[in-house]
Image (tube, rainbow, N blue to C red):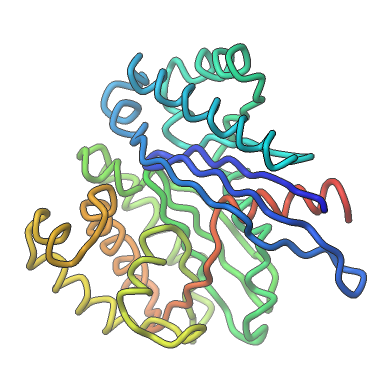
Amino acid sequence: MLRYAAIDIGSNAVRLLIADISKQDGKYKYKKNTLIRVPLRLGDDAFLDQHISEKKSADLVKTMAAFKNLMDVYHVSEYLACATSAMREAHNGQDIVKLIKKETDLTLEIIEGQREANIIYANHIEEQLDENKTYLYIDVGGGSTELSVFVKGVPEASRSFNIGTIRMLDNQDKEETWEEMKDWVKEHTKAYKHLAGIGTGGNINKLFRMSDEKENAPLSLQKLNSMYNKLTSYSLKERIHTLGLNPDRADVIIPACEIYLTLMKWTGIKQIYVPKVGMADGIIKLLIEEKLD
């Protein structure tokens, strides 16, 4: 049994996905075996101080050591570890990469926004959708939002913007970045009338589960809007205790809603599809493409 691992070091959480790889009808498929998520919140340091503190660095090294041990126990043969916007913006990002290599022997890659977008799109979600439709693919993370426009199943344009949930909570999102995103999205979608959305990331997955929509059914703008109104009517404490949200989800879910709703309103999108994949799945797909296909 072939096993691959993906490590996604995000601005909100750090994830390890271990997947079993098998061949069916001449095609390689993967099945999620184990997924571990550690809410380290590296973005709080990175976006406010452009520096990851000693405490968070130490926690990250410990997390990576634990991931390394698990990968050994599971006999993982290939892995890829990627860090996104928090590590991109921290002046000591490369020092932490060296420290992780020294302490755990894991190689970590700090990736640029465009590579992050490419990894997310390695999921090839568009293959499961109506290829006659045009889609705006929205991936919202803690530090950045990756956008891509798919026309007849082909990515026409994609771009990464420094707008994310942790960045917004820390008031580190800039007005001009929002304007830039608005101009870009309007420019690249204006030629298409019936645009649909595809949303990925931990928050939209959680929102979809809370919506009680049937699997594979889209989430409507109306539904998302009413969920947003409901969520904002509760205090942070109530979102944790009454709605049962994890503390590290209860705060970021609000700015995430705002990003999705804003983009849907700018483009006239009425429905957003929420496949259960993200960055870690994209890394596994990329490994399969690079090592096996």
